View: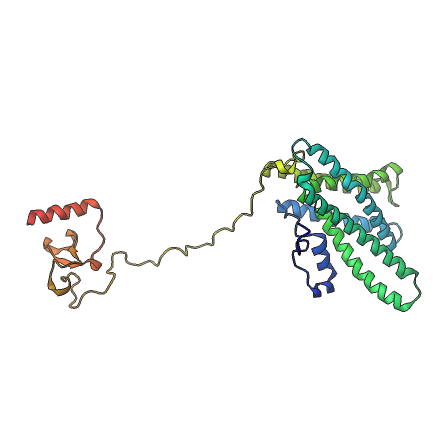
Length: 339
């Protein structure tokens, strides 16, 4: 999957794309091999959770503690990356142990390796950004500050947007199992909150506000995760405890609804009109070519179309359609009786 050329970014990156770090970050940290979400409503809840978590992290852990500090924010990101590096493989390993009854690990080798690559890539970018910040702050050379500073600003946008992406897809673990992102988000949020609850570190807030902010994140994430896994189970039959190879096939995209109106209906008109103009002289019931009423191409007209029930002839193309088998039989016996 990721080893094929262009399969990681889907071929969406160009040389000019690097002028926009958020575009590059989206292509790198939300690769093409990550399956799309099955439920748009859950995807909206994930976005709300990511935005709320970012606001809480910047507001509580930096602003309320004594002013905005980029270095402290990056240190917190580095700590969170270390936790993810330990916790994510551990949680996935536990689930592989649970799935061993219905499948093998070799069946999931490719998506597992891709998720691990994405995790290591994000952590490496966070470490590189921290090193760039330290280099810029510790250097006294204006040229170094200018060059490294521009690179640092590009990397800051790149990593910040990447953090939003990996928070939504959780390192592409949905390619392994659809329920894994919800499980990993729940475990990670509680693991990050428990140390603060145990140590009593309320980050300068009152007891009530500190508990609300500390427990707000894991409780919200858990509620969203339960809603997501519940919908996956009810609508698609996807269960967390079942090996991905034993799950039912995921339905494809729903085809778009047909457009309104009736474009397939032929133009309306007189269904019993003549398909061609009447013969010269204005008589639509004139004999066939050569004046022979029994020439090929001439047939009897329906009785209802013959004034006085005279046995007139007309070209086949000018005859209205008969109204069923009984009318045809009536013509036949009527002709035999007249003969």
